Image (cartoon, rainbow, N blue to C red; front, side):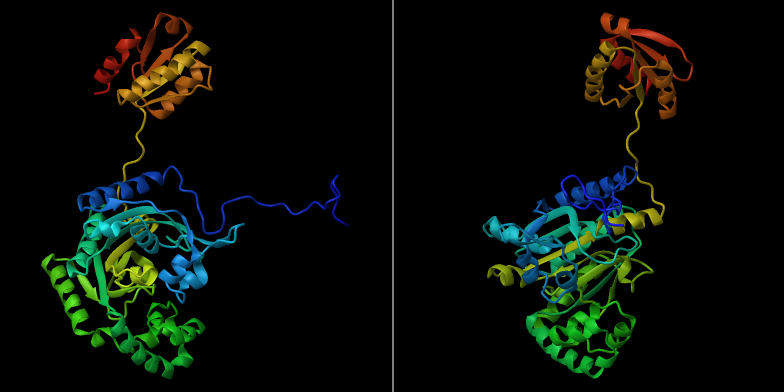
Length: 438
């Protein structure tokens, strides 16, 4: 049977569209908001204290920023970016990470003229078209910390130390730092030649993606999740063995500082991270017991001394880290750590007339200024129903405002435990409530 035509002559679809969240996206429900609030509050407190200034960058950026910054051969650029073309022909992308955006903001807003180094902190949603799984979504949130304008090894350690302290403050104390050095551009040239020779002999065991990576950047093979590729990579030459003197000394200083600060770490010579811009120090912070699983990484980062130069022809060394907020919240929940919920109302305000409802809104503002959280329901007229709601909320006191009370500027206070009621002038009710709610 042909599809029915509408009055305008167009065919109407018989298929029903189920409108729901897009695959890989999710609603952050009220019960999860306290977790996000706590993570962000603690991160902001530490960032402010350690001299990191908060910055917000646009969610939409030019595609070329990530193509040139994150690396044209990385999974992020090749497979995971959400891109679009505007009516004017601009090629844009939803940001998949923060670092290139903050590098752009640093240059575009003249931060090179500020006293160096410049420390920046950001928080917000990022977007990657990857396979959704536990703790990983296509829209997700990160905390991001970047330091621009210093080559010092102590900056690498400052970032790690700050991230560790944030995790400790969230109750995630049983962590370990996996760390490696992938050297500077010159070190990587020598290492890539050696790696190409090694992996070329093992090419038949590599996945299709790694066969392609072999030709473009064999370091990327270390980041592959395929089990066969992991086994092959375990026997590969280590970049650590081919560091130049400067990179060797830099990494040596990083490890010495970590020892001085008593930060536990594991040297992982095959850790590379998934982005092309990294140089020298790279690290990941994981919960102990999960050191070898990339799926349990809470925070990752490293040094990227060539990114700003590659993008904007400005020689600006830098180092940073990003923390996966959903992963951190998942770890908090798995450990059963308590997170304060939303503040509960202490008072219920019932109203019995239109005049009383109008007065209620004015009273709610008085309670807000007095820091007394009050619940009310303007859509209910029945006192019985309002008292049932007050009981369900577990408030200690209910205020009853009827037509007569509204006219006389008075209000009835009902003790929800004893059921006793007393009348007070409106301007006396807040002191009385504070006395009863102590």
